Length: 230
Ligand SMILES: [Zn+2]
Image (cartoon, rainbow, N blue to C red; front, side, top):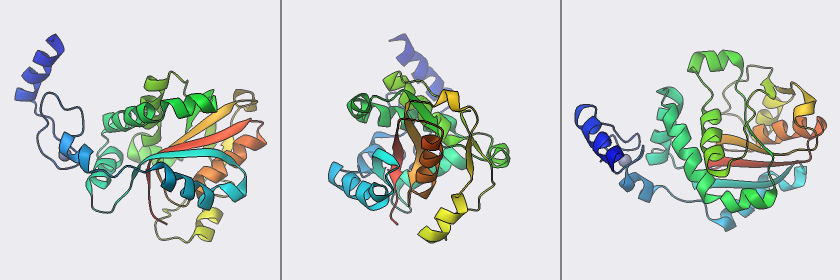
């Protein structure tokens, strides 16, 4: 009750805005407004399964994959993820991670995940952006599932080019050898959930997973907030 009064009080002086549509949030809305939340397309299990088969199955690296939403160009979710990445609104990452964690809680339990690892950014990109958005998504998942995060287990060695205009082959070459496990003791025998904001070709997740398996991890799973067409 007190929290509601406090939120109302703060909203009056310091209104909060929805990153999806820029409208003022009501005191009962948290981070994203209800109207935007109702418009963001959920990734249904059949589609997730077909994307898993298309992008991961034959490589035999990723044992299971889930994504919460479908990424649509110029729609609410794109604005929300843009605000997270480029306006340094890290609380959006926590919110999206919490939604994902709630949605797939039982799936993660059945996978027996020991550790969540956010896909690392190169330190120069992290310095430029101020933070790794995937870390905050992982934090949200962790708060709902109580699975531990280890964000410094992996290192991104190379400053990879933006992949938006690349073909699958180019993307695979672009990330090849880009990651390194710092201490293999941290991953040996573990079931690991890799976390990222948007999955496109799966090249980055496959490469990260390969490096973790080489370091002795048991099984690698992946979860992203959104699935983009490729
Ligand atoms: Zn909105």
